[in-house]
Length: 117
Image 1: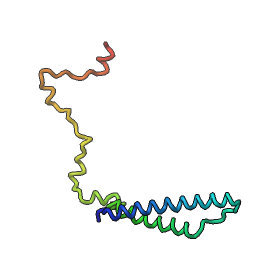
Image 2 (image 1 turned 180 degrees about the vertical axis):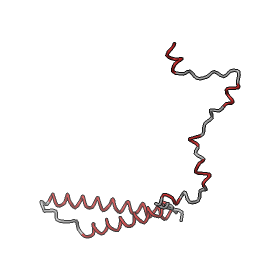
Image 3 (image 1 turned 90 degrees about the horizontal axis):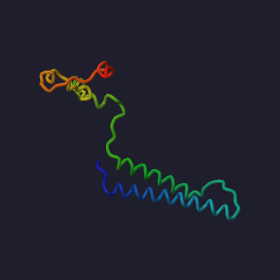
Image 4 (image 1 turned 60 degrees about the vertical axis):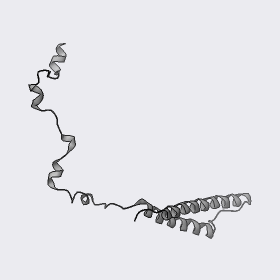
């Protein structure tokens, strides 16, 4: 299923809600420091908001990301024939006998000819 504007909106709402939960947690922590109270745990409403935001973000990412491929390495290779496996462009060579028949052909310098100069 393609990512629609609704899925992207859900993802943005999830990120905004998670950032709000983080800001609320930081604000709660500073409140405890100002009143010289011990930090034991976050309030339940901030914890629930962060947890729900996490699940909303996971849903949004799964919808926006698109189709996943299989982890199995041979899944993509099953549809290829044996002839296509041998066709590797990195092994193509354009060094052939045709250039030897040219009148303007000069062989590449060898190590011996370079050492003599």
